[in-house]
Amino acid sequence: MSELAILGGSKTRTEPYPEWPVWDERDVQAVTEVVRSGRWGGYPYPGPQTAKLAKEFAEMQGGGYAVPMINGTVTMEVALRAAGVGWGDEVLVPAYTFQATASAPMAAGAIPVIVDVDPNTYCLDPKAAQKAITPKTKAIIPVHLGSNMADMDAIMELAEKHNLIVIEDCAHAHGAKWRGKGAGTIGHFGSFSLQSSKTLTSGEGGILLCKTPELAAKAASVIDCGRPHALGGGPEDPNGLSVMGANYRLSELQAALALVGIERFPAQAKQREEMAAYMDEALSEIKGVRVMKHDERHTTRSFYRYIFAVDPKEFGVEHNVLCAALDAEGVGCWTGYEAMHNYELFQPQKSMLAVPNAFPEYFEFEKMSYPEATRACEHEAVWLDEAVFRAGPMGVDDAVSAIRKIQKNAEELNEAAQELRKKYE
Ligand SMILES: Cc1ncc(COP(=O)(O)O)c(C=O)c1O
Image 1 (cartoon, rainbow, N blue to C red):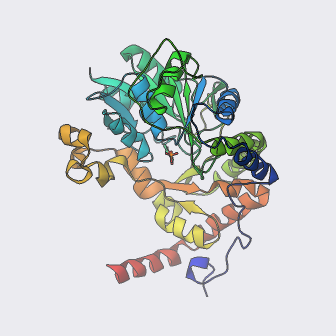
Image 2: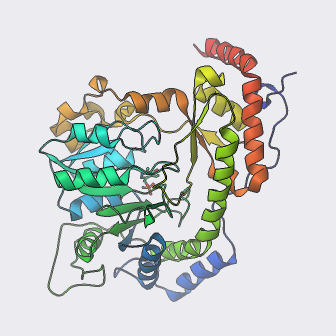
Image 3: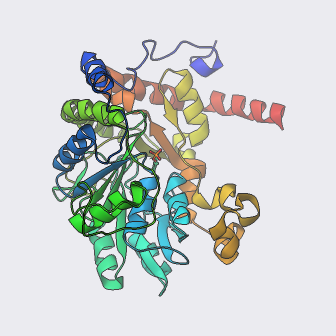
């Protein structure tokens, strides 16, 4: 009988990893109080819970003017609109990210221009961005992916030189710091998701950190149906500063949950960071495993998912086979996103969206080439679930033992994978 759980052997990790989200009586109490108050919704904006969340989140992240809203996709659309980026403008986005990073510019009427990633971090490569800049480029959205940060020094230098708006997509980077500065406080905007898988969550939700009170006031108007807002995102400004908007307001119930999450966040982040350092050490001893480069300027790491790379030849199996086998061993993991140019949904004839149909020349994906993102997506990347890092050293030890066990049995696993492929071909 095989040693591997995927082939009928016993699991490395028998006890389930801890659940997410974490909650206790404080969450129940916070929601109950909002229910009893009768002030559930976001109108007038901001409600007391939402205003408190804006203040506490900006403090937690270390700067900026926070505007809470419904998710971490519209945050980017709103940022672009608040900055005056729109129809026909080009916005640089990385080839390796969730589709939201590219769909948000389209929602604002702008054209996402995809650029390749740095193989050391899988984040947007500033050199590739430089090459993609044209007179129409108005903004850049670096994504701090998994547990890494994009090179914010190079990106800000590029942005200053070419007068670009910088929106940091921080959906994975709550609590992260670059040279001691919070992710999302370096560019003009920081976009955060509070969706249920994120390390700070209210079920659904998003927060846009803005560099100036003026930008925050515009963002508040955009998410509040265009109503004028005072500088700093406060209530209505009688002097009038109105834009075209929609209802993207966060509800008070969600804001209350996020506020309890902020109380828990520092201890959780500390534990993840310690356990991930332990994981770095253990993985660096395994042949064919490449731990992502830890840039010294990335002074505080945060972990939405822990990403590492395998060299399929040296390690023994492709990343998708490793992930399937790891899952069976009881260790949650994933091969990660597809490369952005593989997303069919942006193709003009399929999406029926205004931007791809008006500018089809930007959406000829078969002509695009992103070797680094493609290698990560198709062969290398392994995304370990964050829960592994909340289960203490034993949680990490189990994941590492499972990876070693799979490597030891690579030959048998490859044969079985081949059989399986034949069966389904
Ligand atoms: C990199 C990235 N950007 C943006 C988003 C969008 O966030 P939301 O689901 O809150 O719209 C996500 C998450 O799902 C994400 O992973």
